[in-house]
Length: 389
Image (cartoon, rainbow, N blue to C red; front, side, top):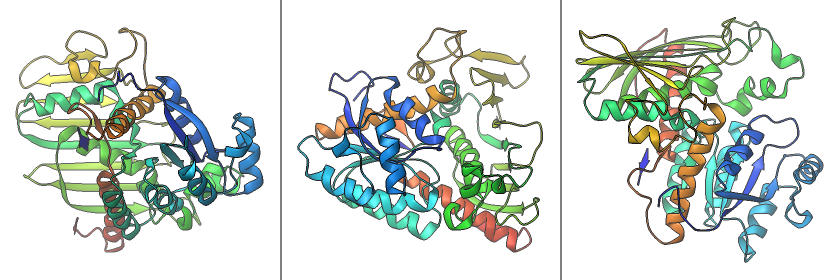
């Protein structure tokens, strides 16, 4: 994670463009809401679809000026880089296989990138993109949005403060049920590309939600994964990517873990859950009740810490918008990542680095996520053999 101006900078809105996220897309709308929630960004340009006609139609629906409503991301990158008031940053919300080529076009012109996860569809491209980011000097933010939740920041701070002692066990799961049938043949655009290895990459559930679970586990625990053993399945007949994954984890320092990611678990919507246990205590957090964090000191009663309530510290407060008891969740978590991105971009405007408390997922977190997916596939192909990362 990058650690490094405050969320309350007085600079004007950051000029933002978007690639992908047009008609029929889900995540593009989420990014647009997140970008404007705190007034840090102004969306001025877009190439919102790989189909030029749909791209233009989508841009008109959003009210983009006609001369900044582009039919292709290449045209957009070239022209925006020449404009005096061209975009400073671009949001990439395309299918996975397009993240790298799109990012490169903007990075080589010094335009900052905010990219949806996973970083790419394969590890080779992910590593090459990391090199491009390094050479560009531009800010690169990967939107692992769950790291923006206030109580996730609280949990991370408690681990860093040593309140759990030495970490021994990390359990994380992310079950869904929306792909329990062959949804990709029903005309569902999101299911179509997520189950197409040419666009999603070799990982199905591992790439789509397993990377979120893996990133969250590492973000909160502060641990580095050394090796894994995975058992992947494609339970829906004819599906070309995994829809269920069981993964054993071995972390540097001796901690162990387990990860379950599934998109064929009826009764589960977005049931991301994390448990972290150490020598002095344990933590439990669930995404569907994101304002609650359970903490149990060893040998003592279980304690509930709430967002905005007693016991929540500065790390959670930075991410909190409303008084306690007013729920915050998915959109606000996304907006918090955009706010952190804005702080980093504004610092770059002034030739500096963001303040130490500014934390966001970087390109290196993205490389780690893709390495995790490919290691899972490799292990499963070898009958669950342990694979080093």
